Length: 315
Image 1 (cartoon, helix red, strand yellow):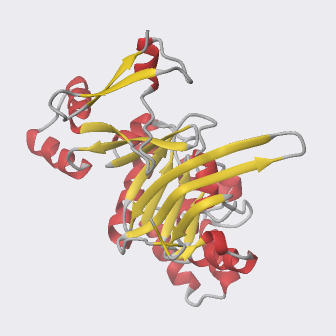
Image 2: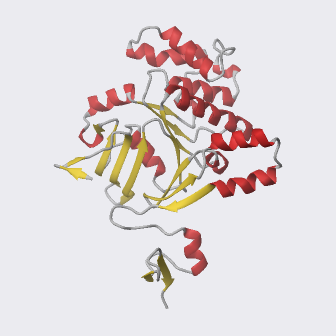
Image 3: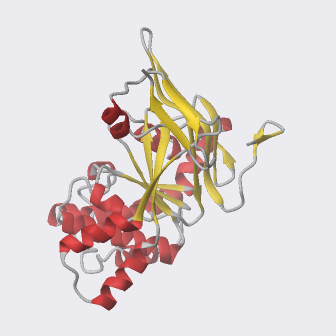
């Protein structure tokens, strides 16, 4: 919503994307990576973004991280209008507002430094005081209190990713962005990293946005937004929080894996997202089942009870 050419952002919202567009141009080709994407993330929320390759999720993450500029639309983060940013604004934003955890550890870590020295580096560049105390605190938070003086070649992939998380938090950002943070680790380590995100979200009050292909990881997050063809297509909402599920399982004792999977399906609900122009993306599997292709014409009717909209395949 715009008022006097400025977006009106709710007080409890830290990320607001309204009709966001990103176009990449070369001399011979124009690619629309985002085409009218809408998204809101509340302060202190932990949520995930999923989508196939080419869906636009990486483009969105780069814009949220201040690594790329929107072409059109509205993008407000922590009350700041990123479409009006100059280079100095972006430097300040990346230094103070947002932290980034990359899938490739080489982008986060300096290999010849110890874990402690790596976490101190962003604070050193900023000129922050009490660097050693802050770095020690963060490494303890991610479970590496016994590995502080270890170099990266002495650590496992999962331990290196924990160091990367601590580095991203060094300058006390309000938002933590994680790009496929479990993409290069096994399922056990993946679960441990998610637990770290949940604990940091709870204890530090930091907003966390995770981009992931890991379906199992997404199942254990209370809100998951799916992106398709540059727009938000659906949201998967847990009818009860993952914390409530864990408490129930602990009270009931060990539950067989098959039964756990069945319960998981029950507590999740996928909702299609209606954008501000009234457009909705129908699930691809539904279109495939009816033999409907993109660009086809369909019949749309209001149900008899006026409580549903029905889509029919056109003859």
